[in-house]
Length: 97
Image (cartoon, rainbow, N blue to C red; front, side, top):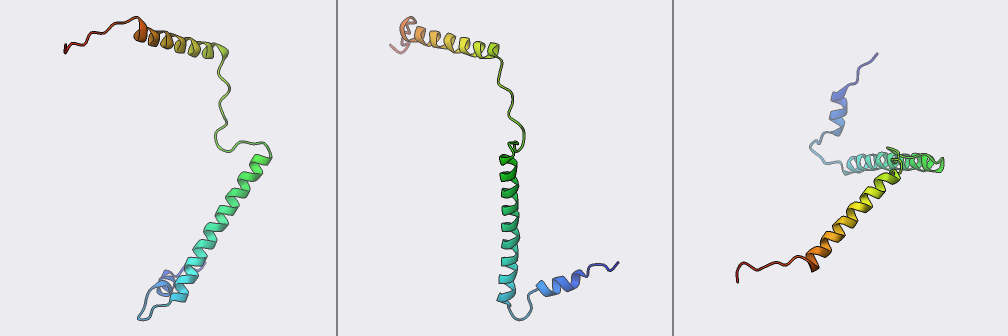
């Protein structure tokens, strides 16, 4: 098996006495083409997964049990009651007076 000759690759990409803007544009267009191809491929894969009804990534957790929802509602009701007490029942004295 023939090994990859890196010196030939680096010699081609190395700036010499003259600048070669055509080479730079080709490299830029190749990198852009690869990035565009990867992006299109990724989006097509995601589209096919979604159209099949599958999820992408971690599936959503199951809905919480009704008991947990009731506990949360009770907690918010207690907080609303306490907020009302601060507004109407509790009296505060300004210590600077």
